[in-house]
Image (cartoon, protein in one colour):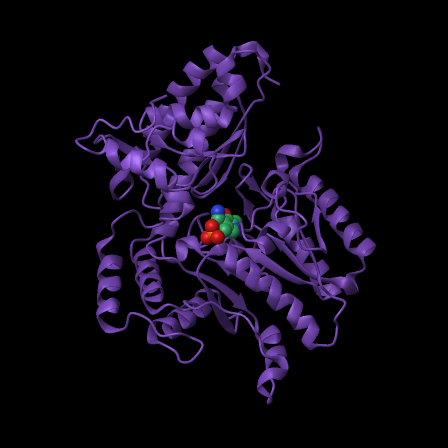
Length: 466
Ligand code: PMP
């Protein structure tokens, strides 16, 4: 691995050194970060990124499952520039602005007018916290003050603020921050990979559903405000949750009055081959969380879609009585909303949702073929352009593998070959490229994986997988 600040570009090693001295990167062990393949990305166009040495990478990560339309889209850049010339900011605390209004209207239309109102945030984590607060105050306003508990799924990820990590189902993400918010419980995730031998994915989903029912029964449905989950999990490896599970969740929530919050922060805006993942099953949640692909990351923005029945519980003729005491200085930022509107136009006009479905199927098929060739791949799951490749546990003693969990080793070797991916947890590599990915891009990904796994299996030793 290169040394810190080793960039060979003229004078660019200096940026790396200054970075190391001043910037604390998200979700990183900084000592390890400094050994990674690239630290300065100088520019990006479409699905490619160029680092400080002029090396070009194929971005199969779209800057954290985010840049759905690809980098440097001129239509979005133009919309941002235009909006800045007109109105840089006006707070939603005191007034409104046209882009925020038009975007809310557009989001309502895109979700079949199921949701009455849109609450704006700056990020996905804030959207999660906002939805939890909406759920709790909804019941508070109805006089059901005991209804505060929140149920989520093991391995679920909903953001990194304290509220969001309380709902996360990844122990590693929470271990240093306790005590977290009380009243949060996790149920077993119906990951088809975990299905006991001889059980279908749907049968396993039914078992998990039964466990969820029991958990709610045990806690007392009258104390539970919300159930929150991602339609396709991604942060500990990709897990495509069967539709039958969502049918059961819908029925359960209808029966108990619990609000179902669907975290579509990663899956929204075409990522899974439909505009929203809920369209696959046709079963819709009560509240929906959006961020990432809403602006393709060009500017920070998140949103919570809220149904009329929930919104109406916050109405009252006396100002302080039932109002939602919550919000952010830059909620509904006009420039971020203008970016979102242009971004959605690009997704629609360029047929990126259909492309995500087609390119995703092609890539999934290719990865499943690689799984037959490489015993180090133990599972491949995907929907649209969100794919996970789960690598085997390794039991050998090489210092390299002891130090580097399989997914991180693979991610670094892939980066060396010019492919940017994402290590999710220790054993899964996640692919979530821009929805503009073509078959040729997919072939480059498959080729890089084949080359890297050939090398890694020599290091790992084929006989040592479990
Ligand atoms: N939920 C999901 C499903 C996510 O993938 C993410 C981001 N990886 C978040 C929530 C948090 O979003 P943000 O990083 O914008 O706060």
